[in-house]
Length: 277
Length: 280
Image (tube, rainbow over all chains, first blue to last red; front, side):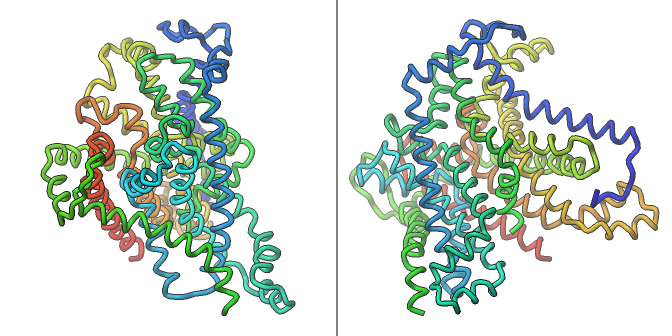
């Protein structure tokens, strides 16, 4: 153990485990409760005190399909995938250029990047909404994509720029001397060594896009609706179909589960990146 | 030289326009009388700013936002630090705890809001319909102004504390063990070492976490929107909820833009203050 030189008494350890377990319950209970409730029938969710033993039913999940709600999952996936591709292509080239070719303009652009991150979302949506409305593109996945790219792109560039700046120049220079141009150097030399970082940025981009609510909510109403908008609109209706709402919520959480169990390394890296830089 | 611009131009032009545009257009809208479905757009100097600041909701929003942002920031930072300190110890199973504690941070905020709204519900919720009545409170939790504000604070802590924990843990893991040697020789106990060595060593991580958390809590919209929509009445109406109401319920985009600009200025001002402290 690096940062601790003291050996802990059994009591201290017991107290620490106790605190950990309390927080574990606090963190996990709502998630487990959603999962359990999504497997109940509507009638079973109404019983108080709640029954712990019941025969699980997949009715709620079937309703997602029969109720035509898969559409919003498709929209969300489509938006996130396009967002990742565009954000990566644009941010990698832009960040590399900014990192390698210094100028006054480069330094100033950093401020704009951060100002977008610091602006309240309802403020950023005002100009976007006006433009999208005038272009008659409301209620399309394209509109949501543009909005998400707007937030993701500056952040991705900012992260990648910092990373590229710290890469040693020697390898690139030898590639350049061998006659490769900048783009070739970027693709063949810089990118392969930057994969972990690129993956972290991709995951961060995906998470933002998949979780984002306000832009999608304002810009879409029916055809272009995403999963978070679906969750919010179900939660806001007066026909309280609790199992269905829980099932949709569980569906919305699937990427979170996948990330935590499969690519946790990248996610922790991605989440703390913006902070440590 | 020529070649570098070939690589630079396409992505940079797109990025620059995409990034600069909303901020500039936001300022522009904030200086105009701009109401959706009303054709005429009129330049009115700082008129929108005046009407936002003098509106009745503004003072209440300041109060709610101040309470919300302060308590949520302090609580998530404090508990995040406690968890980071514990999981920096040599404990069995810490990897599993770390992984599971990350979960709330990557769940959609809308889902976090719904999950708790469901738990706190008076009719069917496990907490609001079962635990609270057992303890003697039978009213509606989110229908009570005070409890509603406490609830949205708690949910924000639930969903954002994990990020604080991760940032602070990364800071703790960067401490070199030899800084503790002197303390060991002096026979300083854990709490003294914590106060005099550990906390100063992660000072910049704490301030960064504080900046991120402040910006995040100040701009938080989703969870409050799903849980209470700012209600009951305007008891949980923080600035973003207030701005949302002006812009997308009253369709007064000009005033909403003005409020957004005010918030942006406050954010920049406070983050600058914190960044200065960090550099000291």
